[in-house]
Image (cartoon, rainbow, N blue to C red; front, side, top):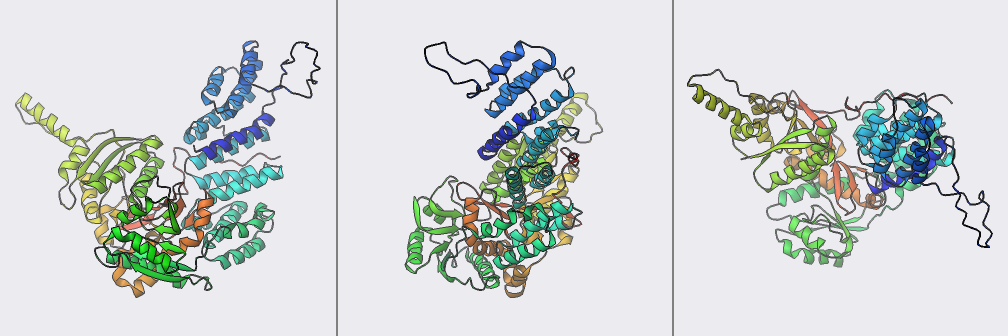
Length: 630
């Protein structure tokens, strides 16, 4: 759990717990001996409650009274962040003999502790599902559940839970804070997901929030749509809770911190090895420029060829400054980005199209953006774990690229609680991956045992190879050609039932159902540009730049590079903010590196089909009952 969420958790406790316990506060005599100074009345200076005080009281009492003191001690320990001490107090309560009131509080506090320790899934399991609770305790259940869903990576369920919580809140300040939390959770969702939600049967109040979030997403680029959308939304949902105060501030909040440069210089290698990639980025950039809905926003665009000489990047940068640019996009080559990142401060705001080697670069005015493959490997780990897989086998190509993806997957998978059982590499471009797959699945050891037994018994034996049983999924990094070879060979080697996860590199981006039948059932992540229905920008690529279709993802990169520029201030100011772009749902980390949250698909009859991430895995599906009537 990050520091912001942890602080919010403590704040929640301070607001709710004291009103929920029903435990009388006992005063402790802290008046010093008579020294001639008149002490203030004890009712004017209430004693500070401490956990130790209630631990001591518990040692002097029995039964339910003792349990109540231990509950109060646990609450106070949680408020201070001492979750181990809080857990110790709860362990002193016998769940078999205590009353239902104490038991309910135990469950809630146990969930608080799990959430505080960074285990939101465990917190969800520990929360009581019964709605036969006092309203204040039920509020705590919904509050913790909403935070746990958010920390576990389910912002949609978090928002749904907070809509339920809203019905129990009577205080106007708490209500507005809850509305902001609903909004922040929905802001994490990409536009594609929000569009899918609109078609689902939703309660009218939650549908209102979803429709408002859709208006805001489109308004990230089309500011006139934002104003018109808010106006139309008000007419459709006049009694919606957000219509009271929240909606009044939304329009101004959306456009705050937006910057509109008058002259943008684009630094790309138009000559040399990366000329075609640079051309695709340029074409996407200009397509977004010409199709931007705000025709009053027409900055001057200058293109500067950085060629294949990254050492001259500072000369090109100076040229852009001297030409009067007030925003720079590029460079593309990593070595040039490295050069810029070594400076403490850049003269102009700069959005690079690649990432520096050092991930903790804090150069002022430097923002880094690109198609980072490690983001995809990490999301593969999250998707695999989300589906209940905890033991992984990893197969990547030899070389630096494969090692980068393998490391990113393993680090994220283990952070979540999974284990990588085996990692193997293969030589890309070959047709037979027998040896690395057999090593990955321990089939080679099965063959070795067969040979040993055959030699020992001096006779032929009927033999079926036996793969290892301690993995429940496979992660691969592969090009389309290699993926089409690898997936069938897993089945041949007795691992056909294991789910296989891959990055976008396994798909060309162009529909070819005949060739891609070989990767049926493969899960893979990709950008909305590839997986969403064609839009005007994509149709532009097909109509005007058909030769660029091979570089379609770089065309999308150029499109987002242009549309992102006015939105950078909001991304930097709001940690929950996401830009719903063509390359993904984009957010900015503390080091000003943009990351992409991608869509997920599974190949069915050779066609990538969107996976519905709105559905919770069975392992943490909860009965989301309506709150009790007040």
